[in-house]
Length: 218
Image 1 (cartoon, rainbow, N blue to C red):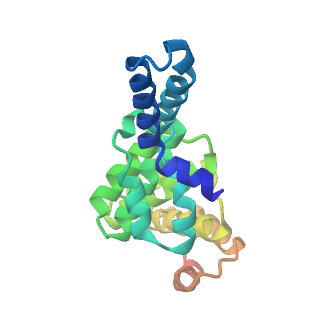
Image 2: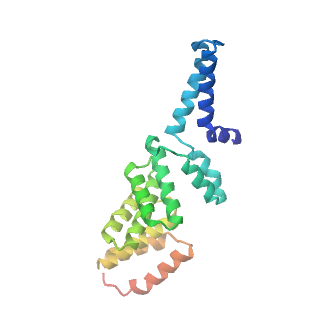
Image 3: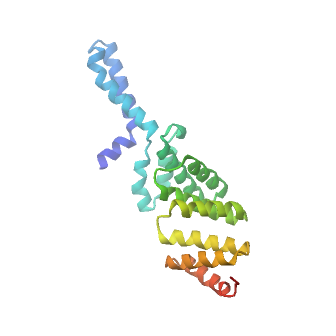
């Protein structure tokens, strides 16, 4: 695995070296074109995979270790993101959005996450998580219409864990309360409770809403 990661890390320069080596051997008449063709082919495939797939596989380990600086360095080695195949490009912009959120650059985060959402993902849950983040940012900006659209989309696409699902349902509950659609607000609140979240912030939100929900008509 480490050897494979090293190849991915230096794939671009290795591919260039292999192609240049083939050209030099051809020019020096050490070997003919067809004798060097395997080198050209390997170099071409290496360059193609570098630009179409990128180095995102290398991100897993530093992400698990919490090494955000290393993740940023790997992301920065993607020179032409528009050349990445669609699923990889979607993941790339999601990662860019998450990094921007960590740096509290919410405008950049929204821009990247919107790009990822417009591209789509082969994994519905990933797209659901993406829309959840956009929905929560829209709520922070006071854009309730946009927030509702994103949160409904997130719930429809599917959200990978109960904690995040509870966050989306609480957001929808708050939106329905704001619209005075109390029956719908209560329904979303019950569904949020059913997720049985354990994150202190989410539990605190549920307790806070519970103070008002029982007084609502409907």
